[in-house]
Length: 503
Image 1: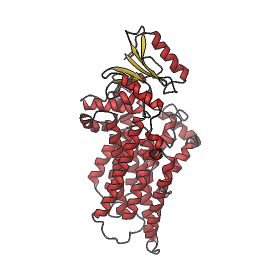
Image 2: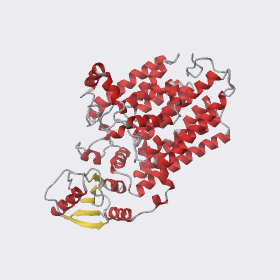
Image 3: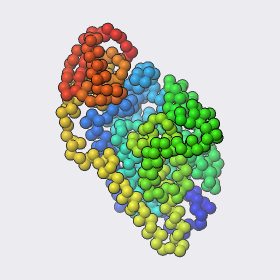
Image 4: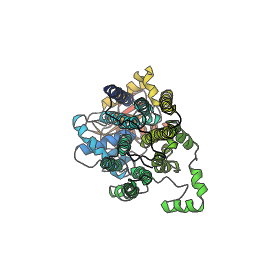
């Protein structure tokens, strides 16, 4: 049967007092968790930027796109378009369908530069703790809500997101948490609005909405909306990936990652029908996929498996775990797990609530068990900190600049503002706010300025010797060194290069 909030239970839940507004102490605790998390996230990201550990791929891509939005244009990312062969006028809407980035444009009217994106990401990720706390408090209680909110803030999917520049994934936890909390509160209009907002985050968010629709199909009173979410979510993902992205200059097959199963959707379908074992085998090939799934379930000590809410995450997880290309998709690093982290926590809360309600009639300890679980979830988050990127904040070395970092600062200082410059991957963010940054890559672009790195291997080169050979080539074509220190070389074209190239 369904309770008044639309959450299915096997038996009527015991009568409980209605949930009232949170006492001021609870609000203070929640505020402390959220503000502290945002401060830690921002400090981590800004420290990486200051230490030249951020990268042009992907921070400069998003910086250029949001800056273009702030000027009333399409989100043009020259660095992406030139490096990937789409041309200098390439819109990031041709890469991923993420028009929600436009809401950050007004921030650039005040503070123009990559730091704005990093701080905005920190706030967005931390803010998801608020609706997650509200959902948990309503279902389990105040102590459990504090533990779950803090565990979310410490969770490795969130921390690994802030450890890798900026991405549209920053919006997903907050909007997902709002969607689930508003559904649990029975606010239908809010649910629809949150789902629509999620569709603006990325093309595959339609899979998340469709997964939620499957959950709603099992809930009396929500089935019509559930059917709409399934159909609308799947239609959106098809429309965004097959029509809208190509319309803005991208390719529908650019991120096709299932070559081991078929050359296209039809090929995968034929494989699934003729050899379903091959599809299942792909879920643990390579085995690190299983480790990522285990770590995700570990966030709630496995309790997420007790809730049908976990169905919501299945389409997105299948999208990544069935892939045979793009290893970043299935590793427990980067930002991809941020798209499902709130679903996992909410499913864990709902699973524990279900278990408590089934036992409450004959076991007076059932209520205490939820507190033990919540404490265990928080303990898992705390224990994981030394093993994730957040631990770097406690290392004094993080705040000390070595000779290479000081040399990098000197190199970017030589480049004047307003010019076009090819930049080694790690130095691009330091110049993105005042120059037109191109990635220093394996194809000469013949920009007026070049900031090269011959001290260590840098993306996308394959060897240090290749990087040194590039510097020698530039010098042979009329470039002269304006700076050289600890492996960093700044070159300036003293005349038009003898071999012209694209901008």
